[in-house]
Image 1 (cartoon, rainbow, N blue to C red):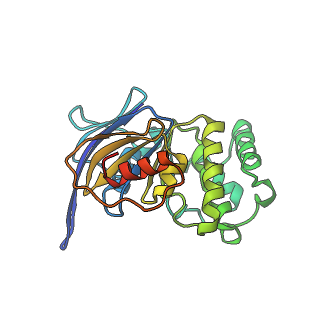
Image 2 (image 1 turned 90 degrees about the horizontal axis):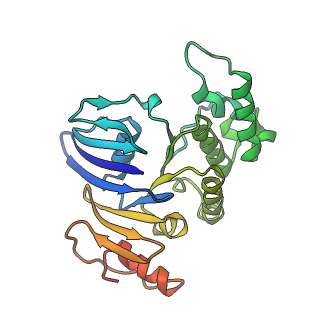
Amino acid sequence: MIDVDLRLTVADQSRRFELAARFATDAPFAALYGPSGAGKSLTLQAIAGLLRPDAGHVRLDGRTLFDSARGIDLPAPERRIGYLFQNYALFPHLSVRDNVAFGLRSWHRRRLSSDEDEQVQALLDGFGLATMATSRPRNLSGGQQQRVALARALACRPQVLLLDEPFAALHPMLRSALRTELAQVRQRWNIPVLMITHDIEDVLALADVAFVYEQGQVVREVDLHAGSSRDLATLALSGVPAEAETPLRGRLRQMLAGGAA
């Protein structure tokens, strides 16, 4: 179960943005869906401990990662969270193997234990990266870079995997195959996933539940299996895409877009 209630204000000379996001789910694969600038990335960064909220809480399987009222704010390395950045954030000067192993090392312990070395090798084998273990990221395709980033995120055996627009950097022709691959990774590792996306196809292909963001708030919860939705805030209706593969997908598109089912 992930339980999130965050309030955060960010501002500069030209813009002020207020995030007030609240949701809870025990779904294996949850999506935060909405347009760019709606507050999804801020939410993910706050969950991971990369950004400190002004108020609220983050709880994961009974562990409190952040609670402003109780003065709890665990450092990012202690949260046991795997994070896949939108641009993958691979280290260009490190090999594939060293990128995957990076999270297992620290400034005072540069060498891996034999168990950790076996773990890295198992990840390389499992993601089909063993033959390119000595390669640099610049020599890999977009899909291969994504696999390296996923393997690195899983190396520390996290409790949850956070994905920031995992397909945005990929050619459209690759996305369908890699959605399938990502679903298989989640099942194989049996780890809950929280993904942010502005692409409705990502939601339809992968998510069990979606939380729809608009202007810094979670306004709707959509159950992708039951084909039902629950409004969490008042929202004006928006248009519905003209085409849908099946009647259920059509209703889900409508729910995600804000229309009545």
